[in-house]
Amino acid sequence: MNPFNKNTEELTNVAYQVRRDILRMVHAVNSGHPGGSLGCTELLVALYFKIMDHNPKFNMSGTDEDLFFLSNGHISAAWYSVLARAGYFDVKELGTFRKLNSRLQGHPATHEHLPGIRIASGSLGQGLSVATGAAQAKKLNQDDKLVYVLMGDGELDEGQIWEAAMYAPHHKVDNLIAFIDHNGQQIDGPTDAIMNLGSLRAKFEAFGWKVLETNGNNFAELVPTIEEAKSLTGQGQPIMVVMHTQMGYGIDFMMGSHKWHGVAPNDAQLQQALLQAMETLGDY
Image (cartoon, rainbow, N blue to C red; front, side, top):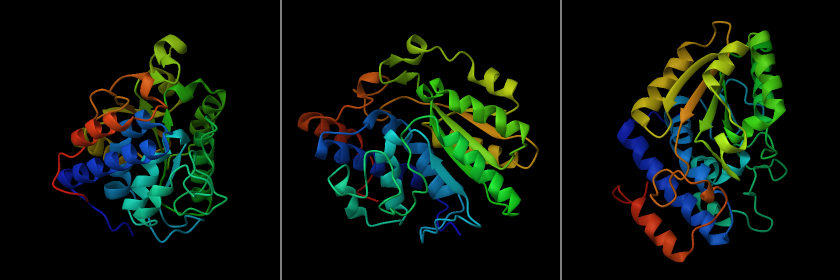
């Protein structure tokens, strides 16, 4: 069903285009969350242009296709760009991001029926629960496709995450692959200073998850890790992939700083950032 099966070079080209989209979108309205969006670009590109069995002719039920849920909904700019570039809606609609009456609100919503969006997200902490329920529904319906979900590391401060983390292994939800964007930053500062997360591997393994770790900003490492995660499904455990990323990845003055969690670049910064995000020949 997925019309995409791109190699590493092609994925990299798409990622550069997505970064340009993100920068232009948040700059145009002086609003949005570029840091996490840039840091999660590789994952979303890999899922939609390599890994997932999905259909841009969107069906809300998601029957017989892989599903993706975005829990940290504030990085919507990256997701909207990937959905548009994958054919879910016209790329021109990205120009309406965060504008009045747009389908592309700051946090993804369902009331305007934007293709690709199955839940409203951005009220943090809910995505793992939703994805677990969707994965259980697939098992009950004898649907052999997988469910993917992305969370932020700062989002793990939410208690609902840990309720779902207990529930999924107990019920052997083994068609679920979850990702944590582990960039060590959240809106108020480093995660170690705000609420130290300790060893995420140890925590999730103690809850009964199979845990993998990878570089979330490197396709050569990320894609094989996701493929390994897929190979581990159906064995009685949900899979957690801890992605080590950098907030603002790809733009040197944004990288690694929580200050770019929710701040748009000014005119000069946009031009500087676009130059860094144009290392391929032309647009995708």
